[in-house]
Every structure is written in C-alpha cells, then in structure tokens.
Length: 230
Image 1 (cartoon, one colour):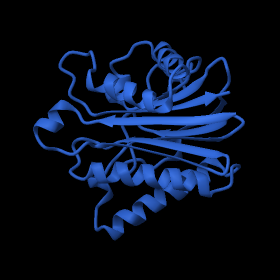
Image 2 (cartoon, rainbow, N blue to C red; image 1 turned 30 degrees about the horizontal axis):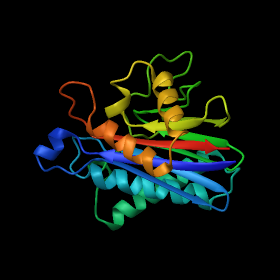
Image 3 (tube, helix red, strand yellow; image 1 turned 60 degrees about the vertical axis):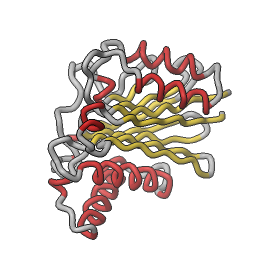
C-alpha cells in the first residue's frame, strides 16, 4: 500500500497584519516503510509558542520513526515531552512561554496507524472522529505541552487506513472549530485528493485555507492529510 502525505499551514489574517509569526506547525516524514506526521498549535497568549510548536512537531516525527513500532503510548509520550523540555532549556526558554498543542499520527505501509493528541484540534478519517468519543461530546480541554502534567490529558488510539475511509486528516482548531461535519469534510477532501497528484492536493489545500469561507476568521490554519494510493 502506497502512502502519501500532503500538508500546509497558513498564517491567520490578524497575525499577518500584526507581523506575528504563524504559531501553528506541521511536519511529516517517511522512512523504511513507515511514516509519521505531526501538527501543533502554539497557544496565542504565549510569546514563544511558535517555537514550541515547531520543536514539538520535529521531535514527534523523529521519535515516532526512531522508536520501535510497538513502543507503549506512555513511553513515547514521555520521551517526546522530556525531549521538548530539554531542548527548550538549551534555548533558555521557559515551557510556560512556549505552550503548544500536539497531534501525531504514525503508521506503516499496511495502513495500520496509531495516534496521540494533547489539546484542541481534530484527527479523523471519513468514518471516525478520533478526537471525540461516545461519552465525550467535546474535544480535549485547552491544554498542551508546557501545561499538561497528566498522561490522562492525552487522547490515544489506533486505526487502519482502507478503501472505505481512504485517508486520515489532522487539523488545528482554526479549521475544526468552523466545521460541524468533520467526517463529511474529511470525506470530501480525501475523495478529491484521490483523483489528483500530491502536488495538486497540496495546492488545493493551500487554496482552501487561503480562501477560508468563514467570515472574519482570524486564526492560523494547519492541515495534514495521509492518503492511501492502492
């Protein structure tokens, strides 16, 4: 099974007008039949959250591909968090100044994947919203690296890409909060992407975010799509 990953991040109009950096970040990589993608949203009230989000996505992707596929969720999360804190310390940055959400998905060429999520945003395919459970009508409360102290703050799980769901999407709340039907949104994007090249998919995603239809939207917007090409 061939896996492709498309990603894009667009700075919010307000941040652009005020010359504030895009506080979202996205990173992906494929290696030796495995893949990983991470999306993060730096907390706007923290001065260095754009550094925290970029650092988190880089460390998450690197860690997921370097560690054994069967590593426990808790061990992986602990490793990523400690590396994040350690690298911030080297940069002389306080964690509280670089708070960021983090969503990560990683898997193999069989379509099997795992995910972890801390804070807002949505991970979903066209049949399952991984960020909302049956007994939880809302996604995670606002938290993130630099704030969270409990493993229970993380949402964890696994799934499998197949012909029915077609792909997996990770999106920050700058997108997800403006959408009522996350599964329908995912289905539409995945279906369109299956008929065009990865380059065209990235162009389409960037065009969608640049021309976001919600009036007066201000937030940065970041999305990543994992697609199966059988």
